[in-house]
Image (tube, rainbow, N blue to C red):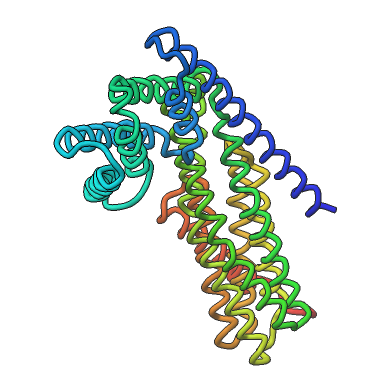
Length: 375
């Protein structure tokens, strides 16, 4: 039931963000049409609403750059095509030539396709096909595009800015959920001596790459929102804290993959699995969930650090119980994961490593001071 509840919540978050972006597009299209009609005197504005919507639907974190690309692309298309058409005239082959040269020049400038290249090509087509009949279209196109781009930025920055924490929460949810679930699967594989379960966990952890990519895109978008939208400036410290945690999420996911791989290999080779090793893996999953419960503001950092120290302590117990090659590999990964989890809460590397070492030493002292049976 917990999996279905999380999926439903993720879907609701997706719908909420989608609805807001759709509302932003509708508002920006209406406002830009009115501004272009009233300010520029355009009877039926087309390019202003198009530029406004293009600015808004650009990937989060790329709107400012997309707007610049859009305007530069329009300028390239107009300048290249208008200059050539004055020399070679109008017609089908002239249209093909100016479009090819406009797109080629834009690609040469940026080295890749994108908004700039698309706008250069579409502007060249427009000038080549309409300029003979409507000379004003040359500058009307760029004026409308400027109006639309500005209106689009105003809408996303001032009128209806996204909540950056909701964007981040939506992107992080599938990663955290999968990471905790697959770590539980590895712990179950160790408990039941089922290597296939560990292999399944490894494959699902490898499949997180697209989610990690979306997480970084969302992070860029959240940083853009708190930079551009005054109403979201108060969230800057929260976004910075989230950035710090995300910077450690990639290595933690990689280390958990390695943990699953060591577990699968060890089980396939028939190595013994002491209870503390299984418990340490389950403790990593508990630490991931503790980080999730801490919330976007990261106020509850002590439970996360304590849970990570439990991982190190249990890994120390497992190491003392006599492990094979793959078991020792798991212990190394567990200690590295614990250190990175502590670092994700704001500790520097030296402090995190010292906490992990102290947790292991505490376990060792406990083992050496425990009275023998019968004393």
